[in-house]
Length: 103
Image (cartoon, rainbow, N blue to C red; front, side, top):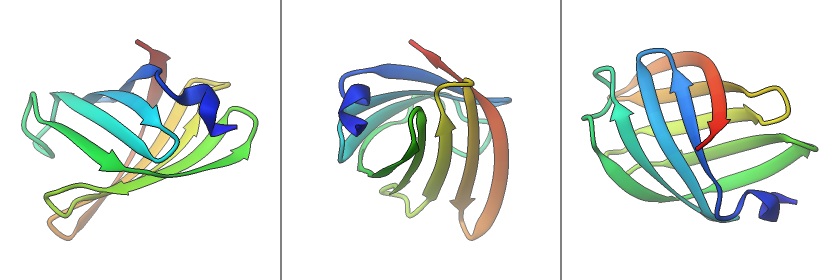
């Protein structure tokens, strides 16, 4: 169940883009941009409504829209510590791959 993520924080490391993400509830998350890599300002913090779906145990499809209009879709594989991310900023789509570690 998605409730196993509630209250936990993770470091999403997507190369130059680094984010600390907390699952506040199954439908809400909050994040702080540690290093924005030109996609977001360093230190930017936001709380977002999540569309979080469990694909199989330890693997989730997670998506949200940020206040700026940026959209984010993640395939989060907690079992293998792998993150696949598609981010749209100002109409441009970025495909990123990285790691997940509990913070």
